[in-house]
Length: 59
Image (cartoon, rainbow, N blue to C red):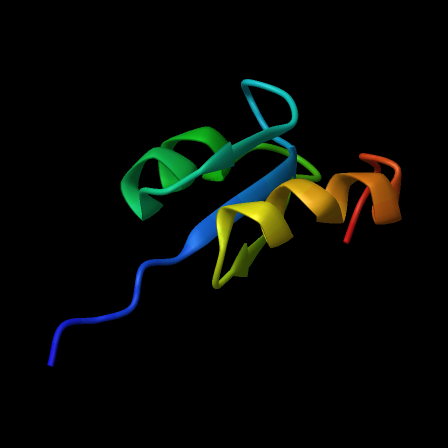
């Protein structure tokens, strides 16, 4: 059975706040970046909504 897709909300990273659908891109953006924060979600809508709840600061 294939894995369910994940979406990643990055609030602090090299490219600023952004939603990704690919872990490799997230890893490049947050790896070794001081204070980087990210969280995974089952849908893109949930990942985008998290920014409004957390005021694009940190999770």
